[in-house]
Length: 206
Image (tube, rainbow, N blue to C red; front, side, top):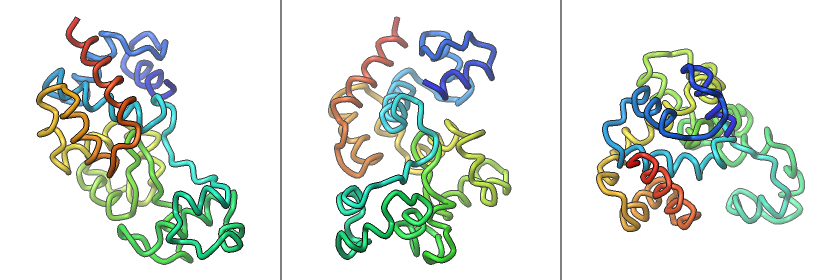
């Protein structure tokens, strides 16, 4: 709950890392989220994606076998993957090269614009769009700001850019399934997302 503690400190709440009614109400106020349903869905997805609000930057410290499992299309075989094993900068530079507005592997932009924030903003195009959304051009040229200063804002941008709140008007398993598909590209961690979303919704309705 590292990022929750940071949020609580910033907004004058007791920094215990626990998400109770006071923290929920402050999140709703600060993020301008209009309903309990929207906030429950938003937090359920962010909680799961960030490993309990602890991760703010994508971990690219993969083993060779992990690379072949997660990024198989970018590596010819195990011998090739071993060259990149446990080298996050090299890994990011390769697997995110020549897409999402990033340059080729030599530019290292794949690593520079790796995932950050509560829902892993990724790729130079997305950082550029987020910088425009926040009216802060510095974000594109110092992407670490997303992890340090715009942790929740970047996730909110993702939701709004992709019109995801339109799926969040009711809290139900079907709604969470549809939202997860849009956030994750599949249904990874669906049971946990359902549990978390329902947990936050219950707290909000107390």
